Length: 207
Image 1 (tube, rainbow, N blue to C red):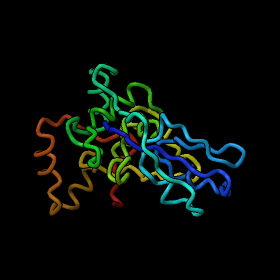
Image 2 (image 1 turned 90 degrees about the vertical axis):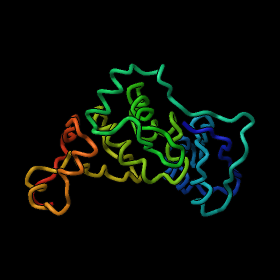
Image 3 (image 1 turned 120 degrees about the vertical axis):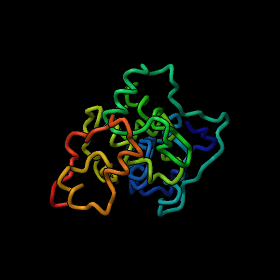
Image 4 (image 1 turned 180 degrees about the vertical axis):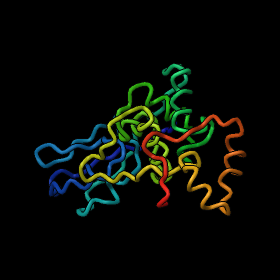
């Protein structure tokens, strides 16, 4: 959950239509029409990346008249489906996926169960990535992949690939690196053995 107090705006006349604001927007709030950005205020999470990246320095963040609360509550998605998705992705529901907003893995999963198809839609629904926008990407992509979403990155947009978890390491890799204490870590973080590898991510002996 994030309470968003700012929204992007820009001066239209000096705009060159370079599209950089569209490319760096994590929530898909900016799209180009007739070589000019169109900003969807309802989807803007106030991160300021467009302002930082604009080469003409004609974008800015302005206060919202009413703060926007981006969240997906427990009542908006079936608990059973959310739990099943988290289990499939091998992610503890209580951890903070977005450490900047303290958005939990359970809320990210709820956004996917509710219908988010892309990383951008997850961000717009939850406010994730309104801070640093780094650490939350991999687990969010993992949840989208576990839900069977199309994982083709949008053109020119930067998606950090989902990183391997403890549960994606094959028996061969775990045996090859005993000093990494992978099995011991698994016993600590998943003592009941609930989590398994996410389909298509299991490591090979070449790791």
